[in-house]
Each structure stands twice: as structure tokens, then as C-alpha cells.
Length: 436
Image 1: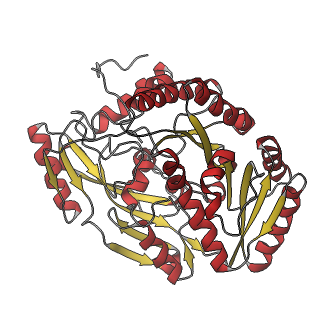
Image 2: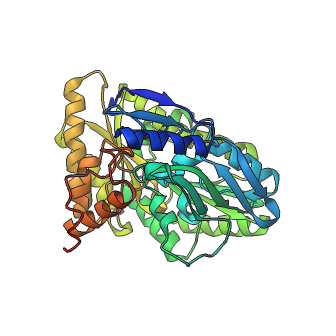
Image 3: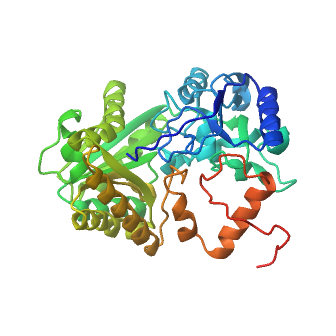
């Protein structure tokens, strides 16, 4: 909850890449900022026209251009809803693993621009891993294609990867080539409850130590459970202070074998372990997982939630640090997220109508970021910097790393018109000076 608002000078909804090209050329001729917008589900304000400009909505650019199920490949336009890709792949026995929480609203172009993650990134990786090519409109309205349907391509610099996670600051993604895989035959989540954080973190260590690779490895601390336990399928005892969901998948025999090994790894100090092996119960579990954020928000009417990530060895220390920071600013805290990646949704719960609580949470977030960097972590594991975290850019990166990234931005967008002010603050640069 950051209360971020903005007003566009105009909103344009092109119907194809050529019309995006015309819009960008027109804006570049007139020195007008361009704010790309997909489904608007981001958490960092990347699609908000905070300082005005022309909003380029990609919702009408929404065709599946090509689908080759026999070769596990698909070319889709930027405005295609994520869930539509999931359904189309599944109908052909295939699987597109990236599953950000707002899959019914998010668009694939925005997912790529933010390099969206999700619960199953532990085994399958974030969105960028599944993108083999990108079509984008860059400065002056030029349409470029980077990569394609090839599974391997090392002929040039990997410009495709620069656009993944670029948050609309290098150009506007208009389509992408996506890699698919055969769908797993069976999924079996294993749910384990622990009395506290320490026992739960030791269980995560055993999963690593046993060499097990679940499709998802999610955690929920005591605060997030207090907010959401009433909706948990089958209920959770109030004495549970830490919950893990480890999902096995594969063929039926593979999923069953892995679920048994996960149960063994988790059961050593667990208060309970449950295997969930029918489709309806699996769906109910993941619906509960999606609703945790809303349940937390409902506790006090708002929240400020940050997607920090740290080295696995600092996971337990980070959870305790979140609580410590909250107490210092008089705020209730909780966290949940992707245990396998040590990607925490560190949350300060607040009354959104209270200016003092919002100010306290803002200061608490700044301290949270600083402490996270001290632990060798990052201020954003999956949501990006957008507008709300832009000030963290120069705090996280060294001067040389920041300089190189700014040179990339300037090479693609010399007039700084693509989503200016987002992700990477752009002070005046002497582009003739390429020496450290």
C-alpha cells in the first residue's frame, strides 16, 4: 500500500505493433514521455503515470500469433492474459510454468517486463527463463526482434535478456516467443506445520540437504497465519507458528515418490504433515495461498509489503529482523513468500487512513531495505523497483554497476522517454565519457 496515483496526458490503446511504432515515433518527435501499461497488477508503480505522459495500453494487442504444440512453442502478443497461455498450453498437454498471483489479470508483456516470479519459480524459474525471443518498439518507433523460436542462439549480444525485467524503460514489448514443456501428470502438495520459525527453517535446510527439488516451497510465518488460518482448508491449530507448502510434481510415480521423501524431510520437527493428493483439495490450497495477501490487508485496513530476497543462510535472521524493525516503529508485522528462494514478502500492517502509520511504515521500509542489503540481499526479488523503490537503485548497486546500467538505458532510450523516473533514476550523463 503506497497510495500512488498519477494522471495521464493521454491514453492510447494501439491494436498492433505497427501502431505502437507510430505512437513512439510521434512521441519521440515531440519529446513526450511514454508509459507502457499491461494489466496494471504490478506492486511497484511501474505502470502509473506519476509525472504524466502518454499511457500506451497494450490490452488490444492480444493475439496468439502462433502455437506449435508439437515443438512446445508459442508466440503471443504482449496483451495476452497469463491464464489464457496456461489454458492454451494445458489443452495440448503442455505447461507454461510461470504463475504470478494475478494470472487472471496480468498480461504476458508486463510479466516479462517485470520478470515476474511466483510459487513455482523454485523449480522452474522466473518468467524470463521461458522467453526465447522478444519483439519490441524502441526509440524513434523502430521495431526490433531479439531471439525467436530457436532454442539456442549465441550470434549476438543477448538483447532479449536486457528487456526481461526492464520495466518498460528500454522500449515497449509487443510480442514474445515462449518455451513450453509437457505438463506434469500429477501434483501433490505436502503441508507441514511447525511451532516456530527456527524449526521451520531447519526443515527447509533438510529439503536442501536431502537434494530434493519440489516444484514450490512456500512459507507463512505466525502473523500471516493469524490473519488467514480461518480460511485454511482443513484448519490450522493456533499453536502453529510457521507453515510450509512443498509441492511435488511429475509423473504419478515421480510425484508420489517425491512427496514421500518431502514428508520424511519435513516430519522430523513438525507438529503435523499432510499430503494433499486430490485435485479439488489442491485447488483449494492454492486459492488459500493467493488470498493470504488480502487476509493480511484486512487486519488493519492496509499494509506495506516489500519483496526482499536474501541468501538462504540469512533467511531466519531476516524474518527476525522484520519483526524487530516493525517493533521499532510501532507496527505489527508478518511475512510469507517463497522459502526455497528466500524471497520474503516483508509486511508492515497499518491503518491506510492514518498518515502517521503510513509515514512510520515508509521509514520502516527504508530501514528494512538497508538491513537487507547489509545481509547481502536485494530490495526486490520479483516485483521490480518501478517508482516506489527507485531511490534504492543507487543504494543497492556500486557506482560502476549503476553507471553501466545507465549507459544501457541511454543507448536504448537517448531522450529518456520510456517510463522515465521508473526503475533507474537518470541524472545528467556525459555520454562521451565511457571511462570509469
